[in-house]
Image (cartoon, rainbow, N blue to C red):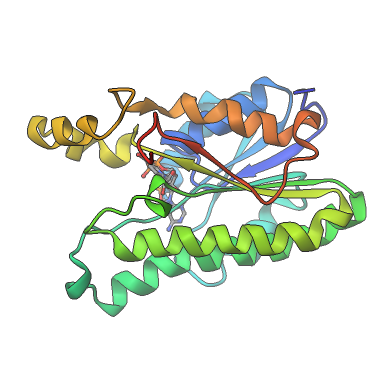
Length: 241
Ligand SMILES: NC(=O)c1ccc[n+]([C@@H]2O[C@H](COP(=O)([O-])OP(=O)(O)OC[C@H]3O[C@@H](n4cnc5c(N)ncnc54)[C@H](OP(=O)(O)O)[C@@H]3O)[C@@H](O)[C@H]2O)c1
């Protein structure tokens, strides 16, 4: 039910954090994985740590990234859209540059990558697409209005596209992590007062690990997940409740 032998996967933003854990898990269950990031050295080092993986470097901030990545990987069976950027700025100070970058990387590149990889998935009558959203779809942080909006919009895309591609054996789902200890929030969580405040809002009482996201992704990628589409799996220790 969970075997991925013979499958290929692209995990965007898998040079560290949640994406790295996802890529590692997929290879452990038999898939060949393209490890992706914008920083060449980080990406290549990550790929060295994961068996059966290949590094693919491209900055999703560039509008041509989807074409570039597709050219480097060819078709894949599993597409995990995990990379994102996040700025902390009060809503009334957000400028064009931060707005555009978050929308480009977190939303537009997701659509463009889905468009690129869809035709072969359709022909194969098999495809698994997972977007990584955020607990902020339900409980937004006051200084991340556009980040949250980009994740909500991505969820809307998931539902819309899931309905349209379901007849071709392709599922499209979102996973929404809560607070997960990764390089992204290492600095913020090292502030003991901030960390206490954040943890107080998590009913389970602690931040998750990157690996906590992997099981749900595995479920969605294998045969076990063939009838799950257009949904959101929230993995947040109860934070959104
Ligand atoms: N950690 C959390 O608490 C949390 C909570 C909710 C949702 N999430 C979501 O989970 C996903 C992973 O988060 P994370 O904490 O693991 O993030 P992270 O530690 O910041 O890692 C981000 C990954 O994305 C890549 N990336 C970032 N910008 C990119 C760009 N412009 N082009 C290509 N690659 C890019 C990074 O590689 P380079 O550095 O080489 O660019 C890195 O591999 C994100 O979608 C995030 O929004 C995380």
